[in-house]
Length: 55
Image (cartoon, rainbow, N blue to C red):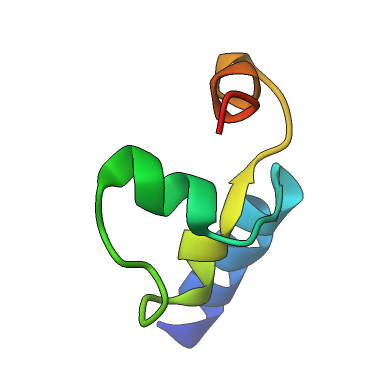
């Protein structure tokens, strides 16, 4: 199972970039400080990047 999870994690990292989590916390209206590493990544391109630029 670990192999499949690692492959999915690497794929996710491949199209996202690190983020402070503050923007996603505002948008989702949730506290992200105690969430997993994936809560601190955002897409590196596409329409969401334009939306996130507003935060």
